Structure formats: C-alpha cells, structure tokens
Image (cartoon, rainbow, N blue to C red; front, side):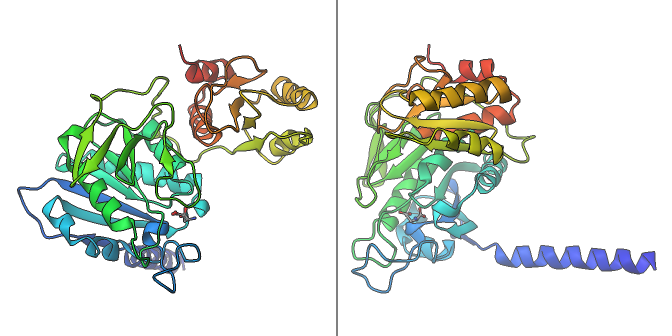
Length: 356
Ligand code: GLU
C-alpha cells in the first residue's frame, strides 16, 4: 500500500516538473565566441504587448508576446551579444508581486555567478518597473551590468519603441563601461540609476526620469556614453536575500486633505508589518493621522516611513517615524520590506534610511 502511495507521489512530482519545464520558454541566438554573453529575463509589459491595430497605443494587452518574438524582432542584436532569453512571467507589471520580484532577483543572482555571463537585461512593464529595478539594485551585489528595460508603445504599434530599447539595453549590458554602476534603467536612449529613476508620465516615451540626480548617460548607435565614472548612490544599502523566502507586507498610504486616519490602523490589522506614508509636502501628515501613527508605533512597534507624494523632494526627520530622505514611497517600500525581512530593529531601519 505504502509503496503504491510513494510511487504515485513521485509520478505526480515528475508530472508537475514536466509541466513547469514545458511552460518555461527560452530562446538563444547563434553562439559567436567573440561576443559577450547576455541573459535576457522576460517579465511581460508593453514591450511584449499586442493591439488590434498598428495605430493603437492605448488599448492593448501587455505581456502577449514571448521572449523568442522579442529577440527575433531585433536581428541586429546578434551582432552585439550572444543572447540567452528566458521567459520568467508574461504579464502587466501591475500584477507582479513581491514574490515574483524575489524569484527574479534569485534567478539573476544565480546567473551573474556564472563566469561567462557578462550582463543581464530584464524586459518589464513600465508601470512598476522602478520598483523591480530598485529591489534588484538593493539585492544584487555585482559589478556586472543589470539593465531593466521596457517600452511605452506595444510591439504592434507604428514607431514601437521596444525593439530599439531592447537593442540598446543589450548594448549597455554588453559594455565594460557599464560595470560597477548598479542596476540601470534604460528607455528612450537614456541610462538611469535604478535608485533614482522613476516613471513620471503614464503615456509619453520620455517618461523615465531621475530629476535631481540626472541620467547617468545616453546610448547612441548602440554605444553607451556615460557622463560620469561609476559611483554608488548616496544612501544605497545592500541586503542579502539568500535566506529570505517571503517578503513581509508593507502598505503605502496616501496623504490628502481630510485623510482617514484609521486606514493606518486597518492596514496593520490586515497584516502590514510596516507602513510607508506618501505624505503631503516633505513629511506632512494630518494631526489626527499622526496620533494614530504614534500609537501604532508605540503599541505594535511598527516601522513607519514618511516619504512624499510630490514627484521629488527630501523627507527629513521632522516627523514621528523614519524619514525616507530622497526615496519616493514605492522605492522606500521595498527598502523597508527588505530591512524587516533582514531582522532590523526600528532604530537600525532609521540608520539604513538616513543620509549623512
Ligand atoms: N500596465 C502594463 C505594465 O506595466 C503596461 C505598461 C507598460 O509596460 O508600459 O506592464
């Protein structure tokens, strides 16, 4: 009887593995020993999006085209690098979860450990691209270039920006000039630091910006030109995710006139282990809201990070909780999630965020 049950169990596990293998698509270009090896992890988004008409740039389905089609659409890529394309997911990036991003980071860690891999490209939806890029910047400690790329027009559109962005991203990942610059974001010919780059416009091609910090460089004719030597962003910290199996829930609350102070309490009751406030101005939260925050910190020992709803700005320590300094809410959130998973105390987290 037991033998029969064990045999059935093994059979089911094998069946699941076969299914998983058949679902994971990959694509490689012909090998050229003179070129660097670049691994492209595909996550979905507009760069892999399809619409009914070549004129349609608003209504389309993101994550419709597989990695093989993305690579085939850019034949010139073969002259720049040997591509190993791997499909990780294929969806709109608004549906990606911290678990997906943790899985991607672990795949990248395994890939950059291979001596023959020169760089990594991640094709990604633009809506939450900066979150994934920030997470990778905080967790992948390597000099090898990690480049996150997306597109604002679906692959079916006239003037689709995806093919050129992908070509440029591979060029950046193949270049020795890109070494030691952390995770990079590439769209619209601009190379930005993941730590600072944010999506500023829901529709335009020039949406990704790092206002105050500026871009690191540009790509012209598939050659990156950097304005500065490699540098580490001020306040960037590194988290080891090797032992992290799951990230804690951290919620972002938005500030506005007459905000409901109780939402902070509800978030904690629903399982938030930390909060990030997209505060008005630099760190302004309403007086009744601050009373609730103060009791949450006292009674639940919850770390609360005060960031800002403004596109740019500096949240300093004129607040009850932990100021995010230059980090916007979505970037501060991943930093807080990683800090909580790594077992940091509230005082340690204050130290992590603080810019001296
Ligand atoms: N919402 C989709 C996503 O983030 C499409 C946006 C885009 O990629 O530009 O994947």
